[in-house]
Length: 501
Ligand code: PEP
Ligand code: MN
Image (cartoon, rainbow, N blue to C red; front, side, top):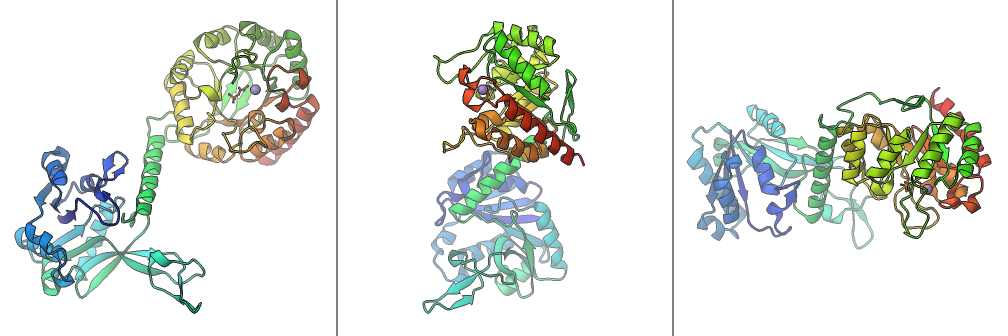
């Protein structure tokens, strides 16, 4: 089947329109590639387009012509003799011998138009002279005149006012015209006497004409590339690779199943006495695992940096004494190796290291369970791809952790993005837990963040608890007191029951 299109170097409404990038392809190339199963005839006034079509092997289905002078000089002619009509007529004369052969006229500014839609539309030529694409306007439109009278208008997106619902109205969307040589020559236009109006829907109908259209197209493209990326079988984190929720049993604690495990303990291990006191208190109140940092990535190099190996030793002693598996942050290769040496049940990768790809690869190869915290400004894709690094390198048990993203106001340390929980669950089989301590930053709101996370579907919590927060060497302000922790655990257990009903 033959497709005819024209591409201009310049566009009056949107500068450089045909050369704008969508994904990594220029708009016109994007569309031409899609038409690879057709005989494509392209008329252009752009030597850039002409040269590309003549040299790019992936465009060998395109026969390209430099625009004839006569079409250019007719630019201002009346509509009946417009250069476009003349161009089509000449094209039909030269290339179409069968009067009843369907010919498709399309243009490169509808990047999401599907070939299958056009082929379906072609079938309408059985009963109609021609087919032309239309789109529905869903906007509710009234025009206000100078006497303040409102009248419904048909369409003019430039002056829309959304005030009330009207029946659907349509506008001609020139995504495609399909006609035969016979109809075109008889009527001297693309639509003919008896056209079929073929309705197409967003995003297929998006015709890039203005800057806003391009913004929408970019957005749609990114979303598609993104879900293609995520959905790809190659991605171990994706639901495509594994549809069922992953359930990890880590030292007897289950993540991703029906229960909501709670990891609790101080921000930092400060001393044997401090950790043992707190471990005992959280254990008594129902914690499933102990947390404590031995290596602390601190904003100021003058702040307490953690006890290092000594801290790991204390953690492993506390684990054995209280029978409480422990989670600890590792910040580089040597701290990761030491954490493994002291038997850390889960290695934590902190928000600041979420995109430290060499660390992710290294820790992945250790094949230990990992809690991967979301970077403070990481998108869902960046977050999941960081987890992909771990899995690709051998880590089988990755638990994601939302801990708040950078915001603009000071009432909390970060903004707990509970919205990422359903989004992660949609894309990935990995469990996601919530750290309400680092998102809240203040003792009084930690429990609200925690319960918000649980209600949104978090698979667990990691919470900072301190019995003497005023003495804490890091994050004292956000530490829950043991009694507050007690209350939180009780509420989480209630939620757990409700969610499992
Ligand atoms: C922590 O858990 O103590 C910590 C530093 O967390 P984050 O990496 O989320 O800031
Ligand atoms: Mn902390």
